[in-house]
Amino acid sequence: MELILKEDIKGLGFKNDVVNVKPGYGRNYLIPQGLALVATESSKKVVAENVKQAAHKAERLKNDAIELAAKINGLSLEIATKVGETGKIFGKITSLQVSDALKAKGIDVDRKKIAFKEDVKNVGEYTAHIDLHKEVKTTVAVKVVGE
Image (cartoon, rainbow, N blue to C red; front, side, top):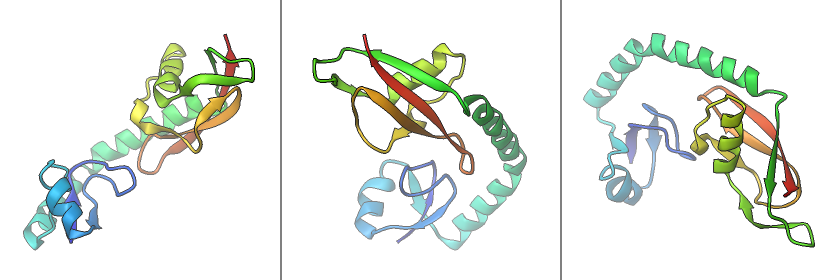
């Protein structure tokens, strides 16, 4: 089933992308939630016109994302948390804590754009991946220490 996405969906695509999904996923989740619409010829033309008009705005957003990535590059965050005797932390470090640490340094990044490849459950150094834009991705070093 061919659909046009109305917003970015992690693991599927970005806004205004035409994607192929299984019919059940499209009919039962994406369309009722307002995340996508059926890709008919007329809806494809409307989306193409909207994309053309939004090109200038998108370029500005991309440039802002590049500037933000330049600020984040080479940045190292230190997050303190409660630690057990074996070096294992209570709970885990999440994207929300990384987002808060970035905010403390004056950089505002939505927590939904931050992800770790593995769960952060021990003291040590990790890399958080940040998707700032469709074409702009960066990483930040996260050091987890005990309080």
